[in-house]
Length: 269
Image (cartoon, rainbow, N blue to C red; front, side):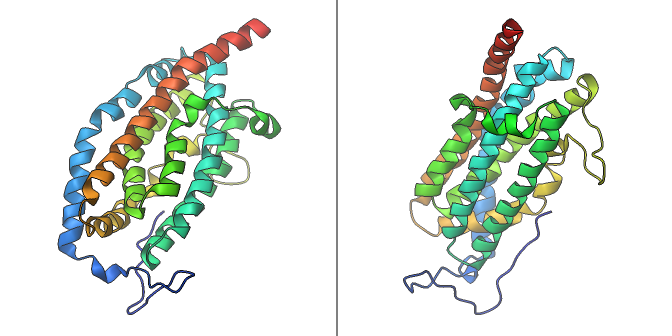
């Protein structure tokens, strides 16, 4: 669960060349309200992407039990490589932080992504995939569109653009993941407890919301810091919309490429 980190009073962090980092106190409640209004506006704009995933062909067929098991395996073989790249991106985000709040925020996100990384092996085991098989799999480029865009943000984006992109990517991902998990439990024999703990093999899909509590409040402050710079709104909007759009494109690739993979596997038997 995310917690709200607050810098100690009168703390000024410095970069390696001695430049003072921006302090959290520069962001007022009014500026956070502006950031919240922008995010709410963009959340309305990305509803079509959320629906493309939550009501899209991949999720529909998994919930109906008609999507081939090999196709689902394809999705989560790619999922492993996506998470590996996300972990790398998040560690770059930590280095881009302008203040203590941002540094702790991105560091915590990197820690949470490590938890997701460990959970992906539980899901893959439930799908009958061995760790070495998962690691050796060559991912499909279309399934990495969103994480590769976040790599671009890691190099050229601002902390506010990154935080907003993560914030708007989340409902697109979560809407599909939760419904996929329902189908996996109903039709594919997953949703089983993992021996020796309180985990289930579908945790990476249906515990995602629990892992992001408190995220919005922290992200809004980072977005608000960006809004202190004149002309920053256009870049923020673009980062958020593109993140949601790329996520929807990935789920379409799951459907199209997953079916093709399943057909190839069937022919090879």
